[in-house]
Length: 75
Image 1 (cartoon, helix red, strand yellow):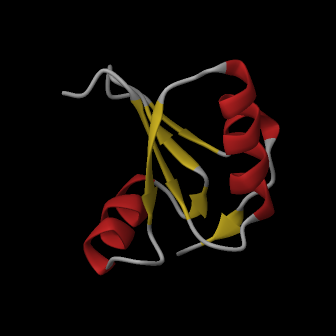
Image 2 (cartoon, helix red, strand yellow):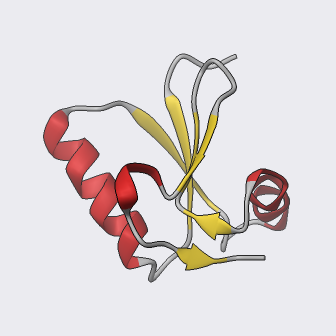
């Protein structure tokens, strides 16, 4: 399993943008997976939740709309 956070996003999602900007400022390492660019990635995201951003932690924990951001529906 990866040691960085995986975050599922889509283009135009303000919640996704705000979260990634915050993490960039804080130096948090993550791998962004754009669900709107790849059907397989979209299916991965939908298996975890129906609103992005969705964060998958290295320990397997899933967090939908982390840090209280308002995300976008993908269901």
